[in-house]
Image 1 (cartoon, rainbow, N blue to C red):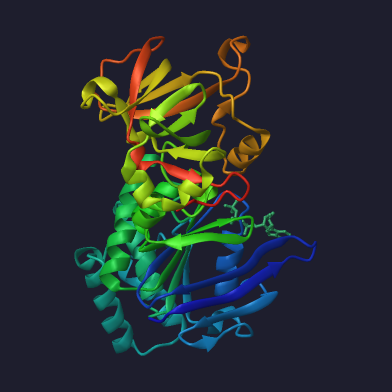
Image 2: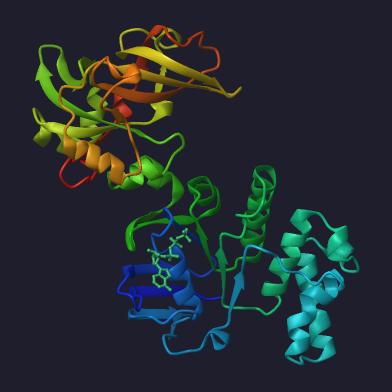
Length: 400
Ligand code: ATP
């Protein structure tokens, strides 16, 4: 295995589309890096440049310390795993795994050694004489990976390998891939548009937008410290609520005005984000994760509370998703809408439900299932203000 390096890599297609723009990434030996972003952000193009399936317009790609820009795909010593496993139905597991080695005319003893070792590493030892149709979906996936691994490539590339599967199988396969790649310690680049898949699989996750790398970090770091509104809105489900607000000082300490409401701000927020002080008394974008809000009747009194009109309660068993509105937003600007839209969000409803009640701000909270909240009620929503995110409205950057 080897490290893979992209250094200021760009791709401009013949029609002028700049699909990847100055992408720099180091994928360590044995690391699983996930490339994630909305459709069309350039992740497949980036992967295809590493694989050698696409010319590189600018920059350098190296594998194991060797620049491969001019090396044809078949000589890059890389294995690609695609959506369909494409196993040979008439061959058993052993022959499916060994097929490529046979084609390359390796000696029989060497093929046997490698296939047996790969089968054992993937937990397929007892199934080597079975045909694909007698295997579970997970076992088939492992055979497909086995076929790639047995060639002992320098790296694995996977492009949405799970996108054809139903939801339940996807979760199973995701676990399978995570376990297998970790066990084998293979350097892997994995492309997906699904942030949950990215977060659960990646040692690190690289978030792309319009050809540009927005942030690369470990999953928890991305979630806790997104560098801008785009990453903040993309990572997490349901998405982070983004609303316009203004911080000010008052007799009761620092308060945050959102729409027509005031939230008392936990001093811990300003210790964690001292930069926010420089933004007092002017509009900023405030990010509130759904999980940082709770039914106020379930938490100690005295914290910050929003007065909410509840539109919808979705009971998911382990939690309630509570959709609610707060009053007329005096400070929401077109800029905010633009930035929010850019982040793939629509937190602001300029008309309001029913079309007559004037502008409102809609939010989603994750409540404990112990909450007795109901739709069409007025409710108090406690906000953990120490965990707020704050962004510059002009640049979208996180204010730290
Ligand atoms: P998806 O998740 O939808 O597959 P992606 O993030 O993988 O998207 P790419 O397939 O890399 O994105 O495409 C990036 C951009 O390049 C898109 O705007 C796409 O339309 C464009 N593009 C891709 N292939 C070509 C091509 N052969 N010629 C011109 N433009 C292309």
